Image (cartoon, rainbow, N blue to C red; front, side, top):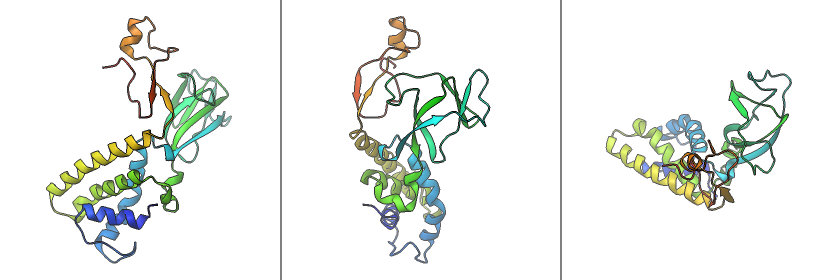
Length: 221
């Protein structure tokens, strides 16, 4: 299990700086890390569909909100919402669902209940750092080092070295995180949809992909 001190020490290794003993050591790195920490952590949480950071909730229409034009119901985001992973009108997220709008910091739809899967800020707090998977906290350490490299060092070469390590660490963390994920339905892409006469591909399910983030549809090139 990681600790904040452990992550900061790892960041100092990447920065080729002397280590620290506590989070209150009277050294420049501690002051710089303190100012950069929250931003680095939030960026890390937003950079992937991390399973440990996901949450799902049923949203009921909020009568105090005005739906976007063309929609009947409006919904508030949870207070811990950072980024949407999926929205559906079914609790099991087993169908394709497009009938909603994300505008003005709220959701609108024509159904009185929406199901939202999202990246939650709950585990961002220091008290929950122990829940972070190993590859994720090591990625955070590199991101912290990268964000503070210009302030704590004077070498562009080191910053570029850390940037390359950061990309590798992020990809590795996502890959390992994906292994813990259930099968995903890989949707029909635009090319295959057009070939089969299905327009945008709505309503057609493709094959199944084990784990991994899907940023494209099958058949897209």
